[in-house]
Length: 260
Image 1 (cartoon, helix red, strand yellow):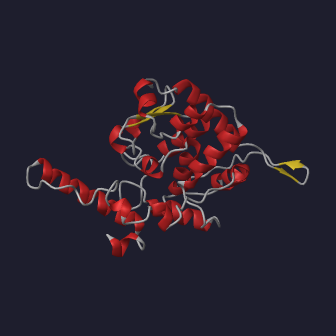
Image 2 (spheres, one colour):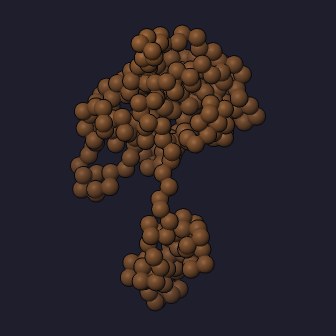
Image 3 (cartoon, helix red, strand yellow):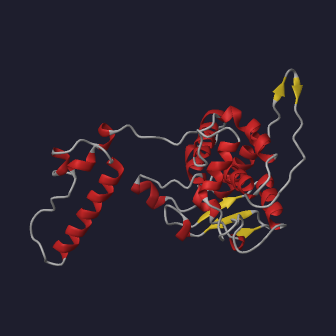
């Protein structure tokens, strides 16, 4: 582990975990009867520094929440599937993979709900997402150009590529940002500009509950409270921008060209 522990801490940590799992399996099968040398606690933690000491954790670059309305105004003027996918991701505060893999069968327009199956969720649990009116409008625009099962199709594949969003951000002059970083923008806004309880915000982000006791007693998904939260977020994203004493009107010019 030592040659890569400092140079590639993320990779090294995964390798260590896999070695530990393999050797634990071997012990369970009776193929070895000595202590697992790859175990962190009580073994490697005495020989190697913690990952936090090796390299500072790099967070996804995020747009300050007070700039989100101007960003969204510019984004809505952009053509293409990539722009609509990013707009939808921001409005729903979901992960990039969840948006790019979204299928029409997961969308229920009548109740304005998007249900992501457990197999596509990071936490492995089905996640119901309340859709604001603006988010539904994005879906209806995409429905006019429906080509298959995926809501946001790519040019040569069923699903739009993650690189399409990164290239879009670069064309907009925001090459320092990532699509995932807008989840942090949403989190900061909710914490600093609203009174929604932390558990509602965390549930909206589909974060796992770290406390096992709390997780055991948490049965509901706070759906109606989350709907109010997402409606408030959509309204904030569309908030008019004061410029030189004037209020810029919300643009009604919305186009959708061929996927890019």
